[in-house]
Image (cartoon, helix red, strand yellow):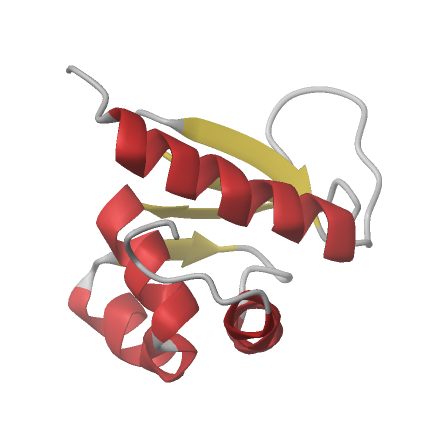
Length: 110
């Protein structure tokens, strides 16, 4: 699959902010085929997949930053796959959305 450079830049910006604000290794946040990070304090693991995994496509990630209140709807519709005890990232996205608004970020990456 060919990666769109604009989407790749947006995903990187969002994930970098999440890593900075919510450091840790208890949740693996996957945005295939662009990236995956580990974030959120909690259970420390040494190998393999963390106990909580959240996966979504890049378009859902970008939309979630703009409209974090859609977390539950996206989970219910299958746009977000979230498993494990720390996999509810709804508050994380509310806070990230507020931060992104404060830096005048838009879905166009500007």
